Length: 215
Figure 1 (tube, rainbow, N blue to C red):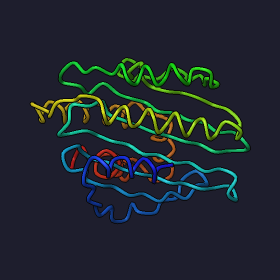
Figure 2: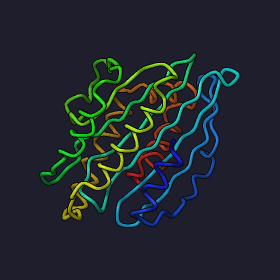
Figure 3: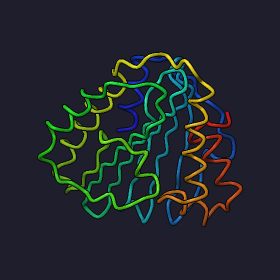
Figure 4: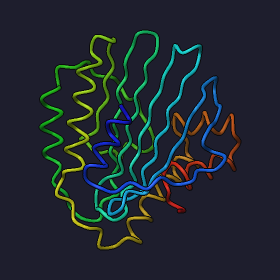
């Protein structure tokens, strides 16, 4: 699915792959992660993580966009296939410097409201998470519907009528504040990487590779 999302980005922006150095392959919590990062010209930073573990019984895909030139929300896509279950998590975080109409994402969510909901739990960053975010969990039989939802929602996100960022310094500060919050207050993936990689290496992974706030 991350390949399809990258293709959607390529249809709108030029993607340039970045050198991620030692972070191209990582091991954490019994999973092997393959990491790539890109600069989307005119949009911002894009990263992709693909992971497998536990003899192939668990697969995880992640794609994140940290907009810099476009005044869009920070975008995070996670997909987890495990033990016959399919989990789709799309989170949008408010790093907007101006008001943005996201009604097309609301319409997409409404059309797929019949799909099984997942309880996202409580987190420190909930006040930043926009209502256009998605949290679904179901069986493999729902995978195609989850795929359709993810693609339509992503296309609506990239097609939102966002203006060019007028204050890139403020945009970067908002992104940095969110990433720094993950590192200091924790998050599902943050805690896993800290335990396996240590705090210093995890900080570089997050700031330089996954979110590009120091790039």
